[in-house]
Length: 449
Image 1 (cartoon, helix red, strand yellow):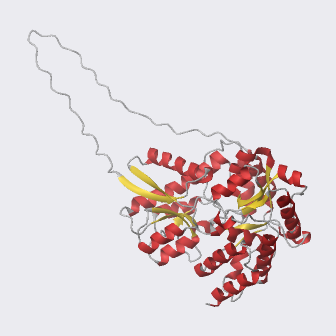
Image 2: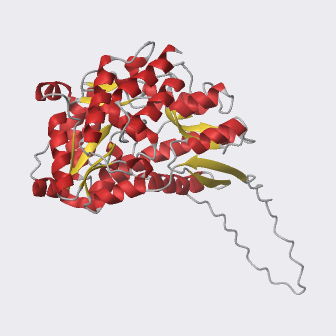
Image 3: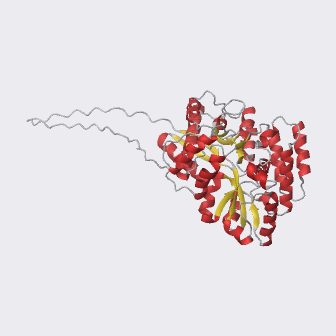
C-alpha cells in the first residue's frame, strides 16, 4: 500500500499512452539436401538417408484449477491464461473446477477433507485455513517466487507476502477496493442528486426509489463477503484501517459500532430488497443492468461490465459518511485492503514443481489480460505489453480522479474467527429484525475468545 501515489501516476501514464512493442519471432531451420543422379551402365542401389531420432515429447501433465468463472471479469482472464498456457507449455492439460458464488464454502469443505484441486485461486482467509491444515504449500523457496518478487509493482508487496512473512500464492490483482455504482437515468427520474454524501441522503434516496418501484441498492448478499465489504465501507469513513483496527482488539471499535448502526438504519429505510441475502451476483447485477435497481455495490473490477451494459448511464461514487465534512475528509480512504491472494498450490498435488510453475504463470497472464485488454492499472505485477483495450470512461475517471488522490487503504484483519463473525453478522444486518446491538454483542464474544 505504500508508494501508491507514485505507482498510480505510472499506471495512469500507462493508461493514457499506448506504445508499440515488437513481438518476438520464431525461426525455423530447415535443412534441405540435394543429391545429383550419377549415370552409369549398371544402376546401383541408393543407401537409405540417415535419420535423426525425434526428441521424446514431454509427458502430459494434468492439473485441476479452482477459480471463479461466471462473468466477464472472471471467465475472460481464465480463458486467456489457459490459451497462453497451451502455447508456452503444450504438455500441460488443465481442468477448470468452477467456484459456486458460495463465499468459499465449497473450497473450505474440500480443505476439511483434503480433496483439493491442484491449484486454488484463493484469498487470505482461505490461505490461513489451508496453511494451518497443511493443505496448501508454502512457496517461499520456489524459483517462481523469487522472480515474482522482482516483478511486483511497487505497493503490492502485501499481495504476495502474507502477514506471517510467508508466500502461499501468486496474486494477479493489485490492491482493489469497493465502490458504489449508480444509474444516472434512474437518479434523475427519482430526483436524487449524485454523489450521495451522507447516510441521511442515502436513506432519503432509498425512500424515493421505493416510491417509484425501484430497488434502491442491488446486493448479492447470498455471498457473505459483500455485506462484510459494504459494512467496512461505512466504517472507513471514521477509521481508515477498517477491519484492521480489530487486530488485538478486545471489543468492537466505535467506528464499527457506528457503521453497524448505519446499516441497520439503511435496512429500515428500505435500501435492500427483501430477498437480498438469497440473491447471487448474477441476479443482483442483472437487476442493475436492466434498470430495476438504482445502485449496485461491488469492486472497481465491475467497471467494464457495468459500462458495457449501461453505457453512459452508469457512474460510481464513494461511500457516504455521517455528515458532509466527514465525507470530504474521508472520501479517498479506500474500502479495500492489500491482503494476500491469488493462485495457491495444493499440498496433495502429485506434480508440485509443475503446479507451482503453472500457478505463477496463470497469475501473470491474468494480470496481463486485465492490463492489456481491460485497461486497468490495478494489477500486482509488471506487464510489458501495451494496452489494446478501449478504456471504459469510469476506468479513465478512476485513474485521473481517484487513484492519484488515495489517502489510505484498509488493513488486513488476521483472525479467521473474527472474519467469520463479521461475515455472518454483517449478512444478518441486511435482514429486518437484526440489530446493530446484536452485531456488536456477537462480535464482542468472538473478540474476547
